[in-house]
Image (cartoon, rainbow, N blue to C red; front, side, top):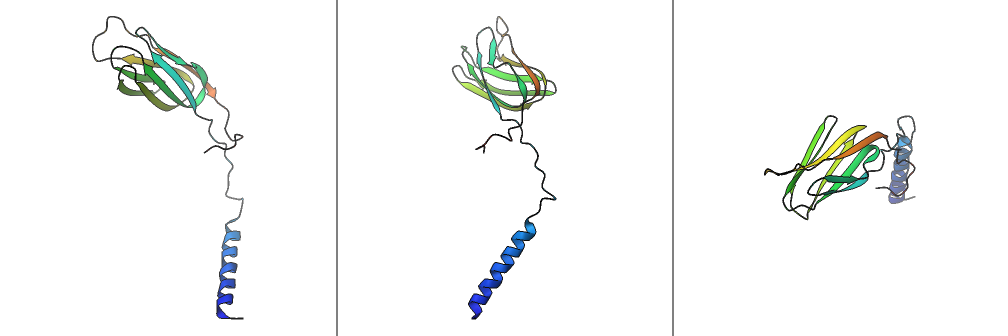
Length: 141
């Protein structure tokens, strides 16, 4: 047997030994995945903000809101211990807020830098217990 085949055999043996040494289930925990993110849509009207769906389980949400008013608006998500703003969002444009929400009640408000004759009524989000794990869903990134 030559030196090259012997070296290849030793390299193969060493690689297989390392791979087998790395196999073990003592230190691997199969923790459940978080729930799938949910996309909510909303609209800023002259008199109110609407968001749909308004009732869902806790977990990550992405709220995309369209400004259908004549002026730019700042969008605010507020509740529990969080406050997050995006904007100003120009008329006929959209703003997006992505956040993980715990159970509780939240408001989505739209405001502007100039005084308005009538305040825009906020949308209310009711967040319940955490949604189911996404561990059983296939083909997720």
